[in-house]
Amino acid sequence: MRAAALYPAAGALLLSTLTAAPAGGVPDSAGASGVALAAARAAATGIPFGECSDAQDLPGDLQCGKVTVPLDYARPDGRQIELTVSRVRATHRDPHNSKRRVPRQGALVFNPGGPGASGLYFPLVGLMPEWKRIGAAYDLVGYDPRGVGRSAPLSCQKPEGFFKGPSPAPVHPSEAYKRERVARAKALARGCTERTGSALRHYNSLNNARDLDVLRAALGEERLTFMGASYGTYFGALYATMFPSHVRRMVFDAAVNPDPAKIWYRNNLDQSAAFESRWADLREWIAANDDVYGLGGTAEAVRLSYERALTRLAAKPAGGAVGPGQLQGAFLQAGYYDDLWPSRAEALSAYLKGDPKPLVALASPVREAAAEAENASAVYTAVECNDAPWPTDFRVWDRDNTRLARVAPFETWDNVWANLPCAYWPAPRQRPLDVRTGPGELPPTLILAAERDAAAPYDGALEMHRRLSDSVLVTERDAGTHGIAGGPNRCVNGHLDAYLLEGRLPSRRAACAGHAAPTATAPGAKATAEAAAK
Image (cartoon, rainbow, N blue to C red; front, side, top):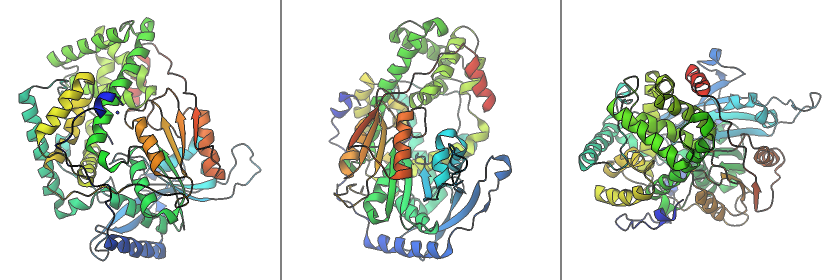
C-alpha cells in the first residue's frame, strides 16, 4: 500500500455495503500451466546480463538484463512483455576477515513494494556496511515489476499534469470538493483504460507472483530466496501460497495484512487510522525538542503550529508551489521514516518564523520526476483496483471515511483520493487468494515488523504470521519505521543475517528494543542538505 494504519475505531466501522471478497479465490489451472511453460522457457534462455543504460553514473558493478513473461498467463503464447532485471554478483568477501572466501548461496531477489516501486537499484545496497555480509553470499537482484519503469510501463495521464501545486488538503472536505474529487477519480480511471486498453486487467498481484516464478527460473534458481518490503510482502505471500515447493527462504519486511477481506479497501482504512497514531509520535518528539524548534512544548501545541502553517499556505502558497497539500505530503513521508523528522520540524519552524525557503526546498513538486511519479501512481492504481472488489458507491466511502476522520483526520481523506479511482474501475476484479500454508508445506520464513508502523500496521504482521505456518515474527518494539531490514537496529539485522546466511531463526516470536529516536538538529541544517541532494 502506498498512500499513507490500528485504532479500534477503524475496526468498528460498519462496512456492510461492500461485498466481501470470497476467501477461497484460487488461480485457475490455465494460469498455473502458463507459469510452468513461461518458467521453462526462461530457464532455457536465462538472463543475458550486461551493462545498465545508466551504469556510468552508478557506483559498484551493477548489471542489467531482461526476462520475458506472458501478459496473460492463461495465454502463454500470446502477447509477451519484458521485465528489466538488475544484479550485483556475490562478492565472496567476508567484511570481517579479508582472507576468508564466502561461498555463494544463490540469488536474493528483492521487491520494495508500492505497488509501483522500482527495485532496479536495490543491488547497490551491497555497498552499505549493513548489507556486506549478505552481499558476500548472494547475488543481489532487483527488478521493475510489470508496469513499472522499464518493464512495459503503465500510464494513466499526461505526466506534465501529474504534479499540481499548490494544492489543498482539507481534513473535513466540503461537498463541493468531494464532487470535484469524484470527477477526477472517474477521469483517471478512464485515462488508465484509454492508455492501456484491454491489457489493463493483467496488471495485478497474482501476475506479479507468477512473474516472480519466471524470474526465479530465468536466474537458474531451483528454489527462490526473496525479500519483500511493504506491498512486496503481499505478493510474496501469494507466491508462498501458490509455489511453496519453489521457496528456499523468504523475508517479509513491514508485512501488510493478507486477509482477503482486507484487500484493499479495509486495509487502507486501517492504514489511515494508524497514521494518526504515528503523527502523534512525531508531534510528541517535536514537543520534546521545543528548545530547538519552538513549535510548542506539547503535542497539542505542535498540532496548532502545524495548522497555523496550513492556514497561511492556503492563503499564500510558499514559493508559489507549496500549499497545504505539499506540507501534508512532506509530513506524511515523516510518518513512514523517523529519520525525516528533523528536516520536517526544521522546515516548519523556519516557515512560521518568516523564512519559507527550507519548506519550499523540501516540499515543492520536483517536476523532473513527474513521469516516474505518474508511472508509479498508475501501477499502484491498476494493481490495487484489479486485485479485489471495491465499493462502487461513493456514499460508502463518504460514510466510512467521514466517521474515521473524526478520530483520525491527518491522512484519511488524502488516502481516499489516492484510491477512489477503484470505485469507477472499468476492468474486471480479481478474487483475492486466501494466503495460507499448513505445517511443513513451506520452509520457515521470517517476518519483520515495527510495532508502530503506520503504512503497514502491526496487525498485518500478526495476521501474516498466523497464516504462514512455521513463520517466525521479529518485532521492533516501540518503533514505527516502515521497513526495518538493514536499518539502524543491530538486533533486527542480526536476525536477518542469521536467517539468510545460516537458515537460523529464533523461536516463533522474538522482539528487539526500538532504535534510538532521531537527534534534533538546528533549523536549516537538515532541510538545506536534503534539498541539495534532490
